[in-house]
Length: 183
Image 1 (cartoon, helix red, strand yellow):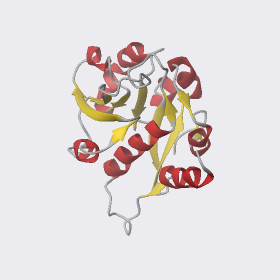
Image 2 (cartoon, rainbow, N blue to C red):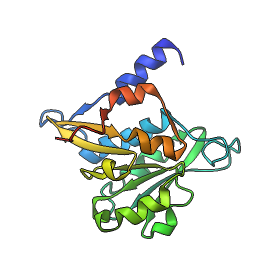
Image 3 (cartoon, rainbow, N blue to C red):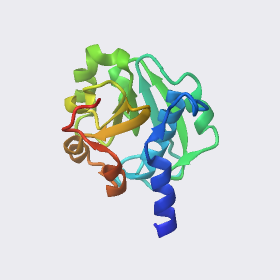
């Protein structure tokens, strides 16, 4: 990655302000954009669908639970690709459906079965993401939080290592350590 590309990528992932004056984007539009940016700073193992060379395979973004995004994900991914693959958005109702997901957004409505979801994704190259406070400590890889009008995120580095995913140090440097309390 060239120096210019790195700077552009960092600017694209830096915390985004959600003040009243800058309300041109909704909270979930910003979070959807960040999901896409995260995928660009993460490497999936070669043996997974996201790491495989077969370009006919889809990059699957799943949402389990009540969908907070509305139609934002479909609109965003209609023409975009991730890792050279067309994106497929799936809305899941069962924990058994997480197989095949590369990114899995866990909605707040799933607090009653978070342990079950994490058992299903543990040791698998599935980027689990949520915006429910405390989920990172439970084993979710990335959790969004809002502080001082900005959407921020924390990364559970131990869970990332166990998943087999490789997260770029550029992304790790932009996150808040998971050991700190989200405010």
